[in-house]
Length: 79
Image 1: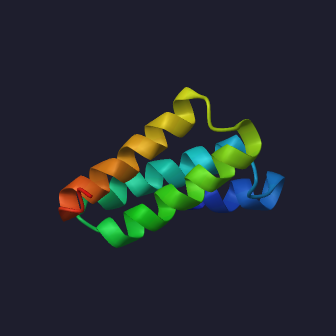
Image 2: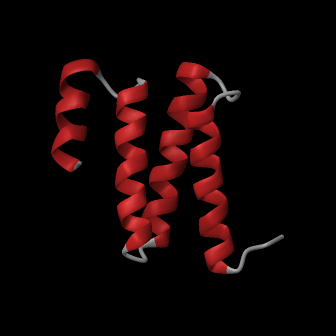
């Protein structure tokens, strides 16, 4: 995924759905490895790009928002 992210950034930039999806996938891996801080940062970056490119009323945005909530739950941040 890291290589794909670099290629995507070079070829089409960082403000597109493909780049956001790759960030999301890397965040998934970081989450699975227990790196919640890095995972959260990547999900938030992906979320911002998705909001800018496609708005907030779509399945992709909702999936990333859900995963951010999962990180907060894993941390015990339930407020």
